Length: 50
Image (cartoon, rainbow, N blue to C red):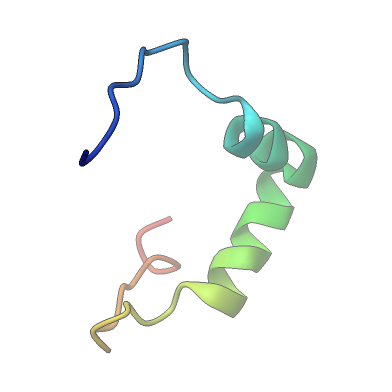
């Protein structure tokens, strides 16, 4: 019953691989398109800080 036990098997590489494939310009473009406002509608200023 409840939540089963899980054993740590290591970090996932998916996000790291995706970011490497995007490159610096691709990440900045993603931030510009997707990360200007947080989920609680607060400006992130992510572009200004880079």
